[in-house]
Length: 386
Image (cartoon, rainbow, N blue to C red; front, side):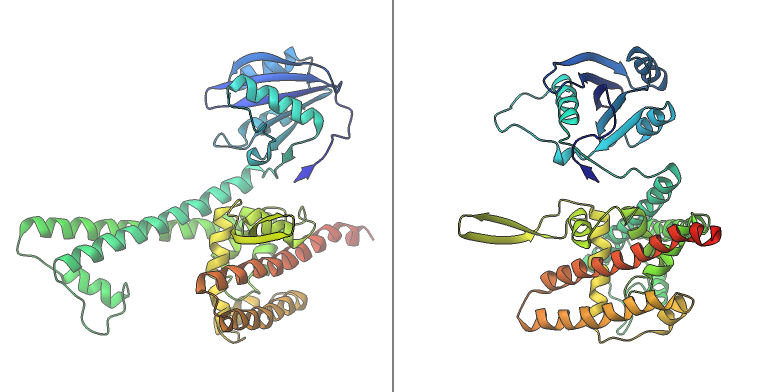
């Protein structure tokens, strides 16, 4: 992310308010006090966008921006392919006037063009199509896991209402538990039909999760080298296995764009909110103004640090081939975060607060490993040339 005035020579600043079918267009000249001109709307189609670029005199001297949103980065890739410099900006960081109560597509486009010229917008990192495809696959698996949880809850509550309980000592959703579920029958045809439907849906979503995880393994194997090395390196951390490491890597993208881990914590929305005025200083819950997918896996991984530092057989296997520097960071994280977990718990903090704080600090170790890998990857061509 970058915030500040545009440094290169730009003659026209273009703001686009993008929707599924239409795009509102506004243009501001390079003069700081020049009037911003609305150019109406165009169809959100490649041929209409190409025509707009030609109407504006070609790509030279143009700087275009639009807000990140559900339309994705297709427009960005199209504009850059035409030779136009384009920025996708964070919608939550676009300046707003407190008394402005009128919102239209035309006014939004004019505001984007004006703020772009003034250097008041914050651009977001844009993934390439392959990176975004892997991220979509990871999020699809996350959605499938949520559906699996819902299917389990529906089935377990149905059995509870019917008074059916598994044998004592049966671990929920284990192989033995699933065998018991398949053996459950009801005399009433309506209940039996319900049981068959719920169990079939559960089997379906389990197969769906399995297919998606295999697809993720294949996609990671074909990913760029630096991404594969980051995913492998992050597994030096306790609680961060392959799927968690992949989620973190695809959600963050380039770690080096964050000059300090606190910037990455803000991106994850896992920093405390604050309201301070005068001598009053008050901190509240985390902001949650960030990436929810990243924040979820961080909190899940943080629970592993309630245990004393140790390496399981699975963790030893996945870290055996890693560089010593990365294993050292992972071991340091175990000692640091375990002590921190115990200290917060001793102060009587709620479990949710404790694991959130641990997840925030875990992100600093993630940043250290990922930036180490990225720096090493950048130095490789130089070493070969030498």
